Length: 166
Image (tube, rainbow, N blue to C red; front, side, top):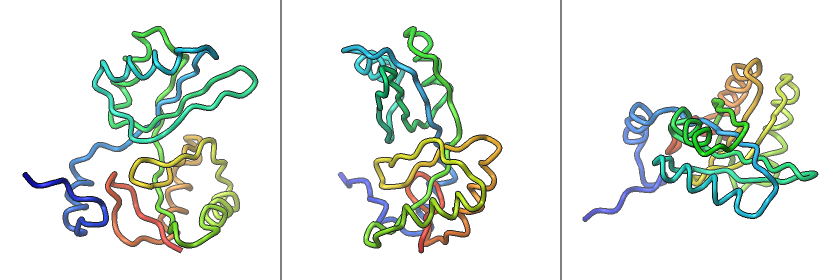
């Protein structure tokens, strides 16, 4: 039995094929109660619905817990959250970028370019493949994608986002 290839092992053609067959990733934002078991409730609801989490996390500030997770099927994830009585929740498209992890300052440089273009990054995290996940206002999405595209590309990532360079 052969093992699945990592992103680094894939050829450009294989990654392009994967991009064409993989639905766009989306972020699900869920406001959770600040109590023990809330994350378990969310994880179980999504798991029972067959929703796999591709990256993200939860942060609690001033007693308000907000979860952001990257999913393939935002509609299914949202349905699962609503059926579990969790939320409020919302699903939004994301922009994926790739930073060169060997070069310090990549996040600051890309974030400066986005800021200079008037894009306010609402949420930033990484997915399991090491892609930078950016959530911006709908009005900023096209500009964000353009800045990320200009950032440069070295090929396609496993999730179909453009890989960004220096």
